[in-house]
Picture (cartoon, rainbow, N blue to C red):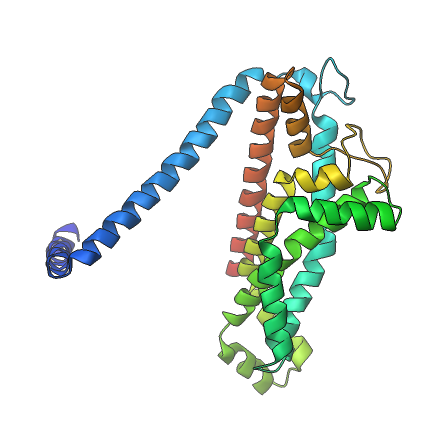
Length: 292
């Protein structure tokens, strides 16, 4: 098998060299792509390695105590707050983003001006700095609605931040579903709504989960917006109206004080592991759904 494939590989390599010699610009682009890929991988490995080297030696049981105080600077309340904040934000933004994308792809007429306006607005919202979202959340949710510094105010602010990401990725996932799926479903007598929920959405689940994974990463790593809306209280929340401190805010607070730099690195390790775990679980779910 390997001997049979070897002449083909040699021939392919010769064809590439001939193509590069005829068009030097292609060789330059290939080199640039390779260098960019290498730099990206090396940067990722360096960041992860640096955090692990700095943080793992500082991990201890005191950092996982149930209650936070100035002696143990426990991150356990912040871990619970991060999970609750992520779940609540996705509970708000997820259905809105998915159903908005379903309307834009499946129900809105082609060439509709409303669709183009919504897409431009979503792309614009994606580029707005998080500090601006934080100021808006503080002025509207905290002050105007009198929610105060609370988990609910932070969750709604983060939901507004990640809504364009979920909506755009879901829209692209729905558009990637072949039209023959829709035609076959209609041909079997299924209605529009049944076709969407039984045929189209399950086929687009991997793409939808990609948007949700990106949203989770932004929610977990967000600091500025939550400091203006959720507060910095390092306690387990009694309700959604309680002020909370997520892991990213906890890490920023420890590093800002300058007294707990080692604990801040340990918090970064836990934060990194949580993001990797969420990505791994989401990938497994997407693969199982795709196989099923």
